[in-house]
Length: 240
Length: 240
Ligand SMILES: Nc1ncnc2c1ncn2[C@@H]1O[C@H](COP(=O)(O)OP(=O)(O)OP(=O)(O)O)[C@@H](O)[C@H]1O
Ligand SMILES: [Mg+2]
Image (cartoon, rainbow over all chains, first blue to last red; front, side, top):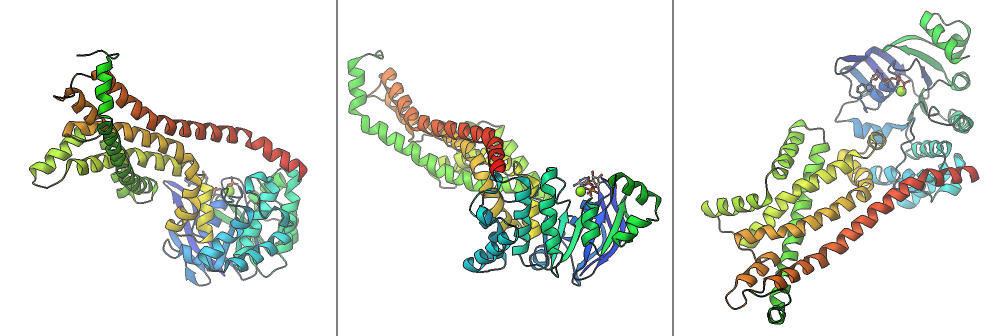
């Protein structure tokens, strides 16, 4: 579904990704972990073209991601949930969900509304359909952002630390929804430090450090006997 | 020469009231057409200045610096004489429209640029991740959010533009200042300096002050709203 071939990414002189090879299969739930600044966000943002790779290639369903193809590929294949939610503040919750399907996928308004309400139901926020997102709590906003992703009906959803900006008491409500999603056949790529979530959902975990993938395996592998010294050091910090 | 309180002078002004109103009308006409040109130029340059094409960014910068750092009155003269000498048949009124449009276009550009740059980068990310192309991103997501930020300084620009029609007097325009000046120096009407200038001033004030008021009130409302927003959000969270 997603294939990265020897991906390098530089910001000026700073090389953030130093040759990433990674394949994500259809329906796979992949969790990416790693210390702050290791390039996890950059990696996931290269997958949907929010960052252009300096060298190497990214393919979605066999199609190459470039500056030119980005819009069309994202429209067709993927959605993204951000750490800071990034809901559109000038639109109501319902409009946030339906804007892209109506404008980009030419879905009829009634149809888009119905689908959006269905997804709001799923994240438990039907009653908020007509309010503006800034009036909602962080946890609620992130649930709306997930509903917005679902309303695109795309086969891949990227999550970049979806619970990191949330107050602790709101983390679980978001994770619960993501766990619910994992039973669908959607492909999920999730950057997170929530190892409980990884253990429950992930088919595979990859550990990034300094722009490289240092280790990958099942969640159990990471809990039981991580091989790399740095993986162990990192896990001992976050699993405390 | 008569004093401000001369009844005769006031009588002359009253007798020629249609002339003043006509001057005001010409001023407003120049202002409106000038504003339309300024808006078109300003939005185009504002988008260039925030876009990804370096050449266009530099062009926008150069344009803004050039027009903001030379006096309008000089630009008016230059345009008028340059065009006249190069044999282009162009009326004083048209020169007025164009020079006001070019000059204020630079200021509108800065307003638009600042408005766009005030939008968090996450909004651009969200739009791109959904598959919006540049034009649609601007149209549906970014520009609507800038509207309320842009509006107060935009109204201030309108006020400045109305006052700046006075520069057209130097090329013999028929705007309110030119009218007033011709009036006080005219053979049959000359001498009524005080009353004439007072009337001219009052007319300008009557148009500009309400606009400034609206801009000021708008700005205050925005500040208040931004100041109370977190509390409101908290209150809602607590009850949610
Ligand atoms: N647009 C950018 N311009 C310049 N440097 C950048 C940019 N984006 C990221 N970086 C740098 O790249 C490095 C990796 O950043 P990235 O955000 O990918 O890390 P991360 O693993 O997601 O970290 P975190 O856990 O803090 O989110 C950091 O040193 C960061 O400062
Ligand atoms: Mg990150």
